[in-house]
Image (cartoon, rainbow, N blue to C red):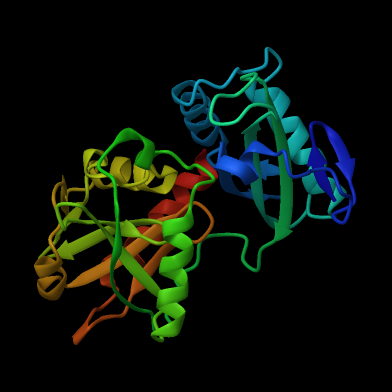
Length: 281
């Protein structure tokens, strides 16, 4: 079951057409998050990011679009899919309503909620081999739109195809200054001698929820130093550890970049702290 503007529909129900602005222009946003036993993980952060992003895109925020209203609609969808007592992946998509070409006829919005099962209730560190390389065919723009979780993900799509064609599990994206920005599906963290670094938002990376949570955790830990700073491809070869973060997977360690092999010591330490933070949220 999916939720379309508050109405629960079977997944095969036709409810969008060729006029949809998300299809035509990528004129939409989405939040992907975890739900567990009827509770959304880091929901307030996802909600605030969505509201800020809608304002940036000049979308009209409905009066009833409160955090409580959307949470109720999401949990209705989770329950309708039989996932209220299980871990679930939730996607909330918001897009501008039909009408107009580049210039919309209205800034009113519609929304879609989806829920799918997840294998694990908490963030679990996957220790299987995970090789990455740089994707250099196209680049991320260094601007605020790149910080948003929009429906315009063509770069991530073609990058994912490139990764599969080359036997990779992921790719790292660069901006026009050839700085490492993020992975195809999350933010990137680099570890060297107890110092942890992630690219700053002004370099074009996604303003990720897990990125934000992990930064807050790291700033309280005395055993690590932390920095938001430029990451060059050269640094990847010198790093002790690389890992990718997103709200659904949590922390995903990278095992190999070209000839460089990485360990997972810091990632193993942080995933437990992240789970504790999620339980308290």
